[in-house]
Picture 1 (cartoon, rainbow, N blue to C red):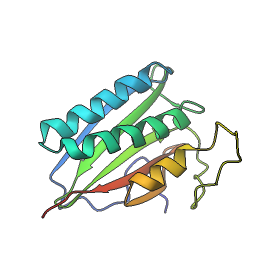
Picture 2: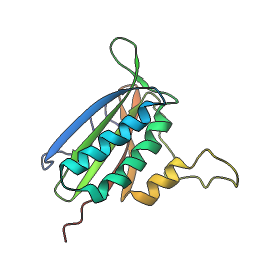
Picture 3: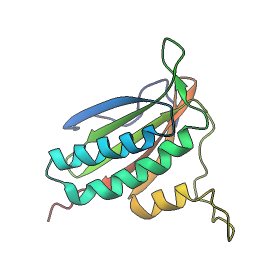
Picture 4: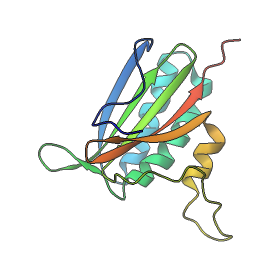
Length: 147
């Protein structure tokens, strides 16, 4: 799926979109987790906040390898949360157009890298990516319990 800078998902039935742009610095990963958790708490969905924050942390860490740049040339990582009636889609943008693998690779014993997508796949209901400008967005969804 390819687009230029805009999510390919139809959004007429989305209820809300929030976005924040973080400096592409390792210490900002904690700020991204806190922002994500706070978003879900503000919407009385704290039960999704921990899973969302962990998945954001993993994808943010991947985005640090090749961040986007803002108009002033500073490396940044935008994060966007799109709320739909029964799910949330979280998008993390980076400057590398190469999509992640469809199936998360199983890390070798003792390998401390390559665990991020395994974690995201365990937490999310879906995961994918789309082209965004000269880079991409990696997205995942979390389902809202309507019961």
